[in-house]
Length: 220
Length: 66
Image 1 (cartoon, each protein chain N blue to C red):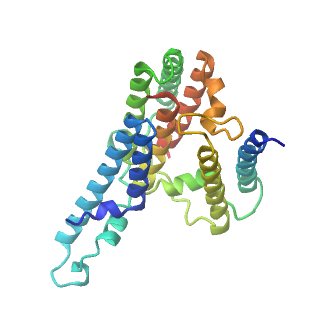
Image 2: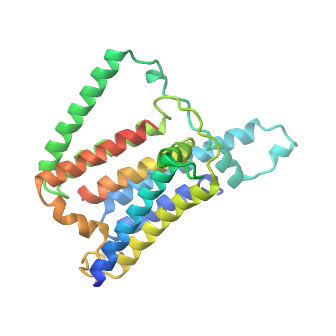
Image 3: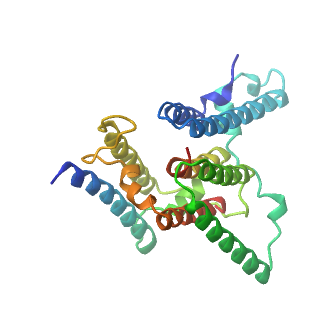
């Protein structure tokens, strides 16, 4: 059976994350990554088959190009969500922003009071993360102008910093005695943040920052 | 410098590199896009959008969930 969506790079990356999360004692992380990978693969396959059905028989588009088709057809993002596309008035925007900020603070304080890796903390974080990913799946909340093609050298520099960060973290992880035992000489980011996240204030602060980043991203 | 110091210095250097790139993008005419532009560009596609949001979600799961 040919499933074109599975060949998309993002799907492969998510499947790898799912696998490594599962074997490193994070089965729930792995399951969620697996579900998102399956969703993206399914959607790419659905769009691909719809395009194949719409292509004229015998025409150039009728040749099977599953990988290319899936990659291209899944690219255009969905239109901005219809229910929020109408611009809000000034006072409505201010009220909505104040409510979101207040909700975020309450969330950070309450969830930060839960013990790390406990079921209440897990449910709170998984629930919110799922909600944000589902909202993001629909498309941007507001239409944004296309910034146009990015300058390649500068974009490559950003990619290089991200790649270097991933490799540096991976090198530290590889030098731990085991996946579960941190190394003082080669600390991962998780090991470095552990002291901060042991207290209620540190957890709430970290959750607030995580929420701010999530709110920023979902509005992109 | 100890191994611990070198590892931490590496993380700090990467953060500094990010700050330098952002400053170059927003305060100079260097051909460097801001992080915001990079994210906006990546998130114009559904796969890119979901990928970035999943990366954010993974961070929360990694640091707080079982």
